[in-house]
Length: 190
Ligand SMILES: [Cu+2]
Image 1 (tube, helix red, strand yellow):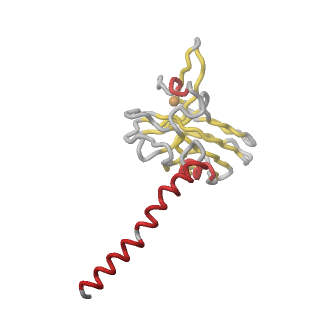
Image 2 (cartoon, rainbow, N blue to C red):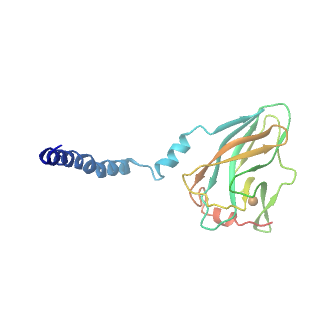
Image 3 (tube, rainbow, N blue to C red):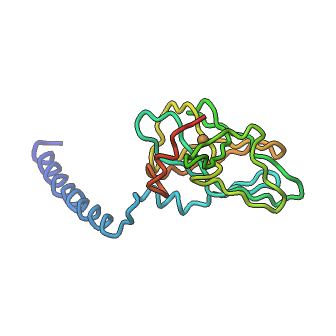
């Protein structure tokens, strides 16, 4: 390759490359215009089929919330339907970044929202659908070693008394998702 060819090649490359680079900001801008308030990643997760089955149990849409810096606990929610003829119990679970996953209930006592661990687990009767949701039954991630980040799903497992263990993925919603009161409710009281 002589000096002239090299010069021409360099010039050609220079001519070709700036074009795609120049169009990029335009594409990004058009994506933003049509974008929903939540980031694209979150929408993709929401659209994903979050249905899991173990034995006669159907688990739907596990989700949790992003944790503010340093928070060691987080609530997680999902829906469980028992399609079988026998009762079963959600007794716990696991998450690689948590030291424990407990089943909790919430109740109002003297105007104060308190949560307690369900030592016997949460019963799901035949034909029943139990929803774990903010302000009610929930899974509690204890001793989180890593912050939960919005749009970054986390893999974990649920443990049932009879059906056994099932791996699920928890969608991570924004801090305070569902209710502005969530932050208060999440304060851990044992
Ligand atoms: Cu709790």
